View 1 (cartoon, helix red, strand yellow):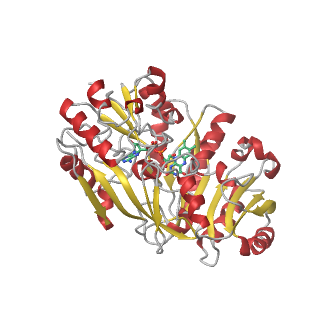
View 2 (tube, helix red, strand yellow):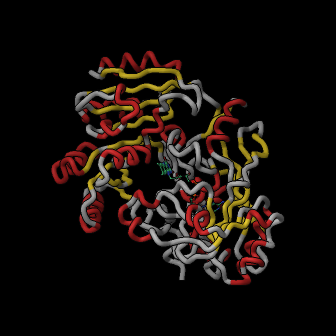
View 3 (spheres, protein in one colour):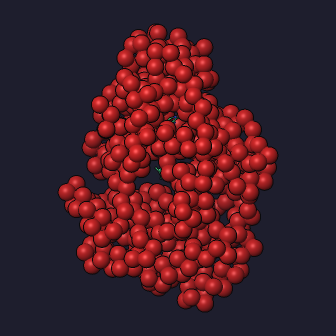
Length: 443
Ligand code: FAD
């Protein structure tokens, strides 16, 4: 079998069987979750194929299909839900070398291969007057294809929503897993048949990603004595259209105590907000923060992803990473608070869980254009039962939870209620060879 699959690549040295390398490329950041760590620690592929063209991908899939070999797509392996970990062996299809940026159209659509790093695309786009609408805090490493396969949003989502919103994904070309794999163009709404399906229903090989005109940004950090005051101020900036923003993250104390490299811009015992705001509005933001009782602890121009410190390195799911360094018992949830009930929801959670549930808010625009308080709270892990009880309690008080401790598309909470991803799997991968086990409703 190894010989047959490696023969699909023009250069057989791009077919890897060294056990250590294969194990490394079979893993992602699954260990983020104590639940997934126990579940996935021993899972690995048998080999890794590193195609460099759509033709090589098509040949590899045909060959694997004929031999009933599972195939798990991999971008950069930065996913934190075990999405890219093969449950049933087979091969990992490492797409990192499919990283050509074909063009950025005059209308601001980036046409790119799946392996292009988001950071490379962002930096290149900015030289042409464009920038990504949204990107994960793993931007430096993460690939465009992996972001579409498993991600949802991040920095920029406060202005532009998530990947699924506002036609940000203009088109994708997808290779199917069939005796003779087909290359199928998905445009408009059809992209939702495949994006965020964890590589279970097709391999995304070419992407049209809508950008937005680049803004001259600044970074700003503001400390407030209480979380309530910090929340009020951040909510006001997030919901007022007059502010041009890319990031608004609000942390309850003691989360900022985990940010060791930037301790100078935190304040002991205080809540903290991080902003990326239009440079032209930086002074006005500082004045508004001080008028609201805040202390500006950092304000500086943003000079691209190499800016130091880069405040986004402490936001979105990076916050969890820092918190886990501070205390390995910390883990996280992914929540959406109700914009109207949020303060009462905060109060109920505090009363029930106290220091075991720490607020970390990420404001984001939803598909209707409203800015809502998304959240990746830091929670203390003791047992799976208690974690599940926390999730149930959140839901009982109207807090949406996408469970990050689940290893299937449906459990992760981004599954489409019309089953469109499942119907697509039935069409494109009827033998269940693409990342098998991750679409739980397929049988
Ligand atoms: P991978 O992990 O390689 O793959 C992700 C999934 O997509 C897998 O199921 C894989 O099989 C599938 N896949 C990969 N390539 C393809 C393809 N070409 N066709 C079909 N399927 C494919 N995510 C966010 O959305 N926002 C965040 O802010 C964020 N912050 C994070 C912070 C940290 C510290 C960590 C560890 C993770 C974070 N993530 C976040 C998750 C992850 O980093 C991003 O979603 C990232 O975009 C994934 O890209 P990747 O190339 O690493 O994908």
